[in-house]
Length: 237
Ligand code: 6PG
Image (tube, rainbow, N blue to C red):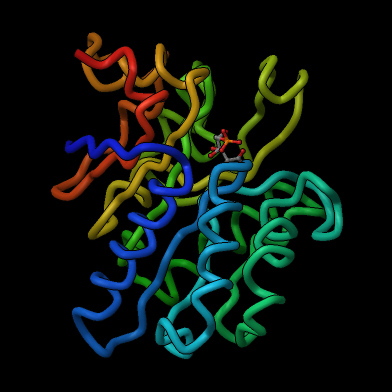
C-alpha cells in the first residue's frame, strides 16, 4: 500500500485523472472502472469534463459502481445520479458503457442481478481494471461499514448490506461490492481529502489491522494507492 500526498483536493483529483489516463492508455482493450460515491469524486468528475471528451478513450471505458444507495437515480443520495450529473451527462457518455446498480426496487434482487452482470462481463471473481474508493470517517469504504454482514461475504461479489450508522443517519440498506470483488481489481485508488479524515487515515494506514472495525483496511492487492491531501495526511508520521 502506497500513500501519495498532494496539496489539496484539486491536486488529488488531477493526480487521479493522470493516473487513470496512464492506466487506460496502457492498452487498447475495454477498461472497466468501479466508481465510488459520496462527495470526494465530484471535483475529479468536474475536472474530467473540463479536459473534454477527447482527453480519454471514453468509447472503451465502462463505468460500474462500488456501491449504491437504495434510492431512485434521481434521488439526491444516488451515487449514479451524482455521476450522471457531474460526468455522464456533461460528456454525453454512451449509455452502453454505463452499468448502474438498479437499487431502487428490491435490494436483494438488485444485488443478485448486479453480481450476475459483473460475472458475465468480468469473470469470477470480476476483475476490474481500476477501482476508485473513498473512506468514511468511520473507516468504511464502498458500503462496507464496520461490524456489518457484508464484511464476511466471500462467496458472492455484490450484496445488500444492512447498515445502522450515524454516517447513514440510522438504519438503511446499501448495495455494495464485497471484498472478493474489490480485492480482485488490478489497481485500487483511494481518494481522501480533508482534516476530518486525518485520524481515521492514520488508523487505517498505520494502526493495528482490524478490518471488521476499520473496513478500508480489508482492501488489499498488488497495487493499492491512497491519493490524499495534506490535511487528510496530517496525522501520518
Ligand atoms: C458512498 C461511498 C462511500 C464514500 C465514503 C466517503 O456511497 O457514500 O461509496 O464509501 O466513498 O463515505 O465519502 P465522501 O467522499 O463524501 O467523504
